[in-house]
Image (cartoon, rainbow, N blue to C red; front, side):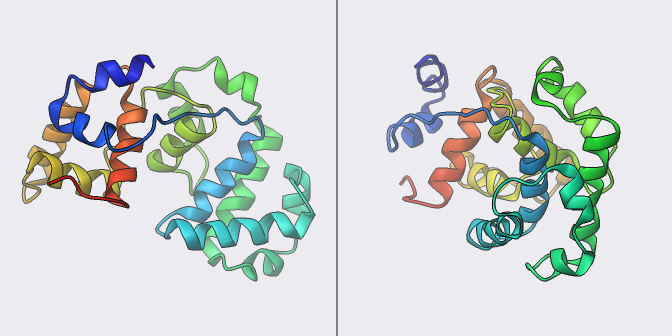
Length: 201
């Protein structure tokens, strides 16, 4: 795989890559469903987020349409474990999908920055949420989630970075990640995988 050869030029990252099997990206069509899932997972562990997302889909016995989400009583959405704010954000996504459009083929014509600009118009959808969508729904290979705490912690450990000064820390993250382009998504996936698994000595 092309990305393995490219990312292995970074000797520190190569140690992580050698620990795991190659990562794969998938493309998913129901973008609004996955954007709702990204909102649900904000500031939650993967395990808790998965439980809430399954409860959400169980309301509809499968994938709901945006209109079905809007027609769902507020308290029904709250009851699956969503906060008031997240319930409103999920409804905002459904409304945006109906009014402005969120079809896969439409977003697929946009570059990463255009997708971020388009979707962050929705209240409750920030840059991080859109980056997760770019990676895991649209299957974009060159996304770097600089604001993700897991990525930051992994890079602090792997590259011995100092995060006491925020501006310099961010510059360091971007400088290191620039070398990974055009495969920064895969680098992020290996960093997440390492953070949750065996540390490299």
